[in-house]
Structure formats: C-alpha cells, structure tokens
Image (cartoon, rainbow, N blue to C red; front, side, top):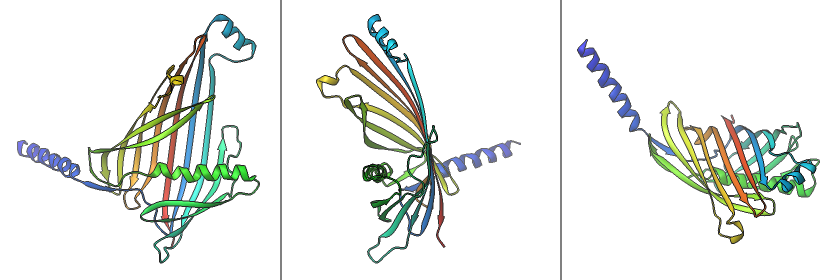
Length: 278
C-alpha cells in the first residue's frame, strides 16, 4: 500500500510538472482557404440614478423621467468569414457575410446578406476595403463599414511563447460618450494561461478600466470599471474559438445642484467554428 501511494504521488507530481512546462506559441492569425462561422451575443443593463434637491427631482418626475432609469438591451449577430487562396504576394481574399443581426426588439441591425470585402495574410490581420449592403443609404453603409473595419484592432494581441501559469497584458483605448462629454479610458486586459488540453488552451481574463481625466471640466467625474472572463484558444488554427467577458462600469457625475450615477453591466460572448475549404 505504501509503495502504491508513493507511485501515485510520484505520477501525479510528474503530470503537474509536465503540464506546467508546456509552452504555447500564442498568436491570432487568419488562414487561407478557411471558413470561420462566428457568433456574438451582447447583453447590457444600465441603471441611471439622479440625486439632488426636491425641486430638481420633482422636475424630473413631472417630465416623465423615472428615477432610477433602468435600460436593458441585447444584440445577437451571426456571420461567416471566408478566406481564399494565397496569391504570389502572400495575400488572400477575405469576405464577411452577415447572416443575422438582431436587437432585443427584433430589429435587424445589419441587413442579412451584407458583404464586406478585403484581403489578409498569415502575417497580419485582414484589412477590409469595401461593403455591399442592399437597402442601406451611403451614410449607414459607411458607419457599418467603419465599425467592422475597426473591430479587427480588438484582435491585435501580442505574439508570445507562454507557459501555464504565466500571463500577458494588452492596453487598448476606449471612448465613452456621456451627453456632450467624451470620457477617454484605457483598458488593461490580462490573459493568464490556465491549462492546455488536447488542441485547446484555456485562459482566464481580467480587465481594469482607467479614466484619463485631464480636463478641469471633468474633475467632478469618478469613473471605474472591471471585467472578468475566459477564453478558449484553438491551437492548430491560431484563433480564439470562444470568449466570454463580463464587464462592470460605474460613472459618478457631481454638479452643484444634482448628481448622476450610472452603473452598467455588460456581457459579451463570442464563438468561432473553424473549418477548412476542401
């Protein structure tokens, strides 16, 4: 029995030591002749609370403003991202087709069948260059195109060789409009590698939101926020097959006669099923 215990102890210790020495070659990359079926589900809730004099609060009430004002919203998007063959310059064509995009009221956000074209390579993220969307005016098409084009910057993560238990961080800007004001923030996202199982690597995600308040007009605003989540990384395809992030943001705006507090909670889940074009 004692020998069996020692054997099991040594075996478990070996497994733990072996896994901790595994190194992941991490990078985000699109491959040629590949289909990425993607989904994105975004749910958000906002609670806006007003504080102030009785006269101020009565004015809000008579105007039909609820205190607190609670708003909930959802967005569900399904799209397919296809890449073609690599040409002599090392580039390949890419096209995004939007299959479904609905808000919580059942309204279509991006018309079904909208196509966005571009080109990519294995050394850089795709660059989109044109959009085809039936039934949309030029202003709406340009707005959608810019949002989609800029969304690829969120995929820009550092290439790292990382072991289990190690982490890396990414800084990214965020601008949030509040009335006539724009609050500039920075997001620090920390990715910690938790385990590697078969062809997948699993990360914990932690975020900290910091406001960059330099103007004297914004000194009466307190902003804070955090986020937590998880990411599954498809090792052979160099791509995140699933990620979930829950974020909480708090704004506290104080004026002489009143103050406004905004608490928001947002959850974003993204998935990608990857297959090769035969």
